[in-house]
Image (cartoon, rainbow, N blue to C red; front, side, top):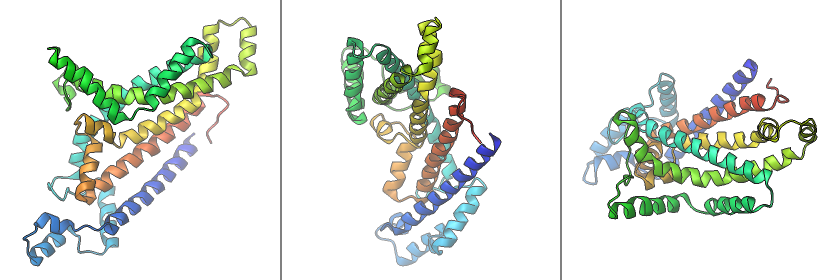
Amino acid sequence: MLRFLIRRTALGAVVLWLISMLVFALFFVAPSDVARTLAGRQATPETVALIQHRLGLDLPIWRQYLGFVGRALRGDLGYDYYHQVPVTTIIATAAPVTLSLVVGAAIMWLSLGVFNGVMSAIRPRSSLDRGLTVFALFFYSMPSFLLGLLLLYFLYFQLTLAGITIFPPGGFAPLSDGVVPWAQHLILPWLTLALVSAAIYTRLTRGSMLDVLGEDYIRTARSKGIPERRVIVRHGLRSALTPVVTQFGIDVGALLGGAVVTETVFSLPGIGKASIDALTQQNQPVIIATVLLASTAVVIANIIVDVMYAVLDPRVRLH
């Protein structure tokens, strides 16, 4: 296990290094002039050159990259070009928003998707199975921005017109303001992400469970008189969760890098919004930091998924 973790960590470090080089190079390939934008249209060439020198943009690209890597290894990701605040401050401010959104939604979509998938699998071709299939296809086909706008219209706008103020229109309330305000601001974004993702997990769990329930060891367990509930949960579901865990790790890792659409619809100041603002402004330090953060989340999620394989299926061994 230790050798596996060391090998995967080293591989993840190489992946992050390659991504940082690619993003850094793309920033210089893109037709943009950050110094001119900061200086304004009426700025003199001398002013533009001074800003370029102050930001280090007049150095060769390889020196700028080496400087960035050296600072990053010391925990310094540079400064926001436009606001002159440390990038780590921007990430530290946005990360709790995205983390709150993703963790809450992940719990909802995993619970709902796995439950629906199991119920469909143990009653195949029944009215319940068909109803859950329609549910999955409906939300799987719905864009998340459209679902978010519909939830805002019916559960915020219409309820507010009726004098019922349960959900706010958007924004974020930190946990320091209390659990209730925090949850009120996040329940609609949670539902938006959860309903769309739960549809995927419903179909994935159903298909995996149907395959597992046809295995010889399941028939053997039933022939021994083991209660059906135990057969389904302990023997069937445990083996069927392997592809679900894979998908879950990919989804959570990707969303931790910023749920861009959902954060935009609900005006959540998370990592997704920070990355969009940085791309619009060609704000190199923030762009690279958010990409590295998203990549790190995916790498860590995949390592955790591989470890979970051995926990769920004793036949899997990590070396």
